[in-house]
Length: 66
Image 1 (cartoon, one colour):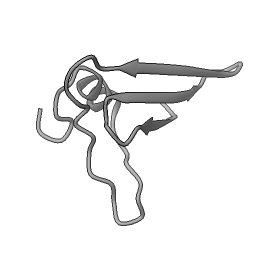
Image 2 (cartoon, helix red, strand yellow; image 1 turned 90 degrees about the vertical axis):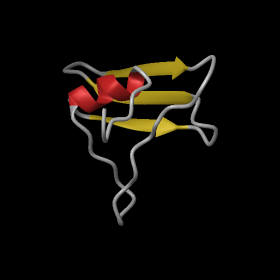
Image 3 (tube, helix red, strand yellow; image 1 turned 120 degrees about the vertical axis):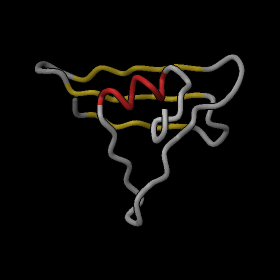
Image 4 (cartoon, rainbow, N blue to C red; image 1 turned 135 degrees about the horizontal axis):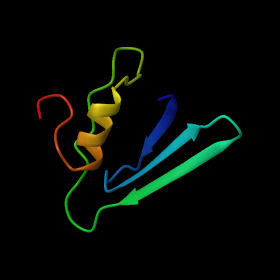
């Protein structure tokens, strides 16, 4: 899966921009309680996660050590 993810400063909202064969999908999720456990970026400021790690992140689990 190829896409871009954005999280707000409070880490309770996430947007994912995903390219499908004909256009873009925009996924948006907001947590009522708690925060997303956002992985730490590399020195260049990038985060690369697998689709399984994305599922863990969206489920509120730690994507680095589930």
